[in-house]
Image (cartoon, rainbow, N blue to C red; front, side, top):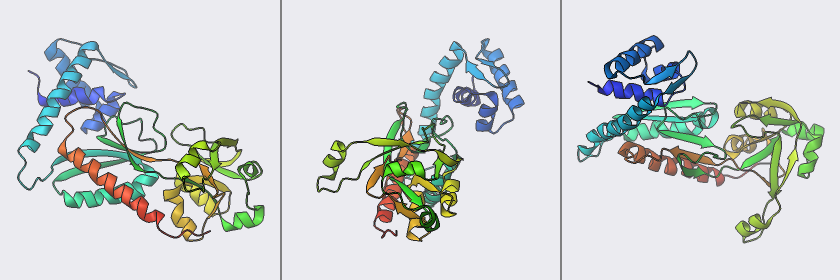
Length: 318
């Protein structure tokens, strides 16, 4: 007989690229998971997966069991919520993935407030270098930048412009660029993330008319290919290098605004708009979304969107 634990096992295998990854999802060791899988295959008389030390793939029978098992698990997970008390207290587990920097500074504080509102919930926050598309063990993903995968539903949270900044000391020594082409003669700090072309900086002149949106659409979009003096996969490191006078950095507004306000960085080429890095909430498209996930979606849309609006109202330095 198939047990609920068997369905959890095949669900983890379907969402993982290896036995080790599936074992981490289930908080068991890889040998223990492998033994459970062999036992399930013996019970069913079927080969459910092909596995090596590094790769895992489900057979046709394994995919069918994972698909039909997922529907059963979704019903089981939703069943307690159908008996919620009148206080509508949420329970269960929510798994959220977010990038390191934005996750530490914005998502984690927001989740702390969400947890205080729903103390019966168990929240798991997984900070990763690239939370998208490595989304297999998450109920929701916070992504910063363009989304090139439409398999999940994207909910915008904040626009998040990119600002070009340098320290006062760097600008005093090397001069302030007056146009994007001047960047070819400057030391630039690039951030390697989300498989983007990190040395191609796209821009357009900022619209100043009353019909800003229309002017933005009609303005010419151009680009410059910078030669990086320094490169890092950590945006906070890149910003700190800029604060220390190593060069110019093109970085998200959420991470540079405080440094600009405090005089550590100066925003340059403010009359030009560089490609933005919108903050997006990604959730699965599957039906039967739980009440706890819907509550999280509504909360993050309000909390992160409101925090961005509040920061925009602060006076800018530089």
